[in-house]
Length: 199
Picture 1 (cartoon, rainbow, N blue to C red):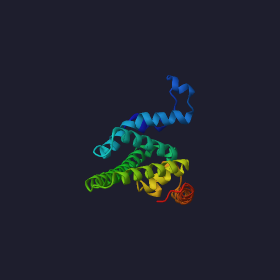
Picture 2: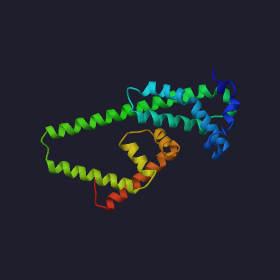
Picture 3: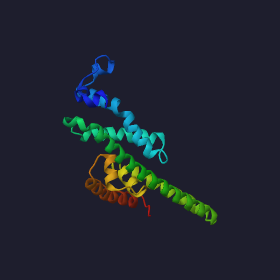
Picture 4: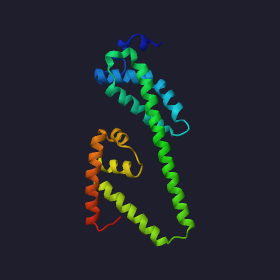
């Protein structure tokens, strides 16, 4: 057991010896202390789960998401359970990221197979160019919707992400994501119709 686990009040103390400590709020100092104390622990859990699936960037992003979730949702009056809470949060987040990465890899693999079969079947090159142009126009139109609508539509229809996963990305509830998705689709249809683009 580390000194920080044995004496949770250390998490609330500032470190006046550091330059950062002088300009940070008490909450920021507490978060920095927690991050510095438990980063290796969280890294070990996340890396173990994502080592065969994700990149170093995926691991780092997952770790940051874990700490962000903990800072938002953990009741710090129960600091004796912090390590257990962090461990559970890290495991669950890493498992979710691994599932998402695996699904995306499968989706990309299927898209590559489709592209290879299109080349092998001697399809008309002009038709391929038209399809690429249509896809580019569609993505540009989706981007013109702005955030978070563009992210919601891309995650929902390009990556087949669930509303709950999308909600975590854009900071909305799953109900709000579904509602925004429905409205964004209406806007997208209207923009495509106005541009004489049919899908």
